[in-house]
Image (cartoon, rainbow, N blue to C red; front, side):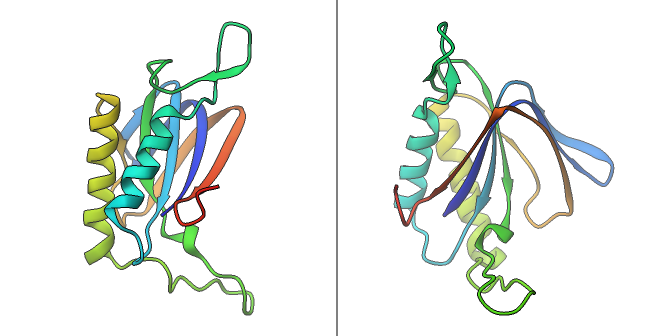
Length: 150
């Protein structure tokens, strides 16, 4: 699994000109799933996300988690995170999982994150043409790949 985490002061996802989900301060997470992903990847990533200290404390130091700040989370599926640009100029998405595998993993990811944070998670709709709007706070943007665990 590959994610892009953005600390936001607000974010929303719109489908067919209707807002599906919106959050105020918190995290926008773009989630890419590949066939090699397992529930262990979900567990590791969700644990990391819930405790990642990227929010400012009283001294202005990034020392607080989304849970510490009682922030909200919005998760949007993003198959293009597994794009390969090795050959030519048209990206290949062969590593990105097909919906029959990716949708259940996406749903498990959301359920795990809800269980860890004790909060409802905003979502997009898997496979839909979505318009994602955000105000990146900081800006703070972090990329995490569960296969590299850096």
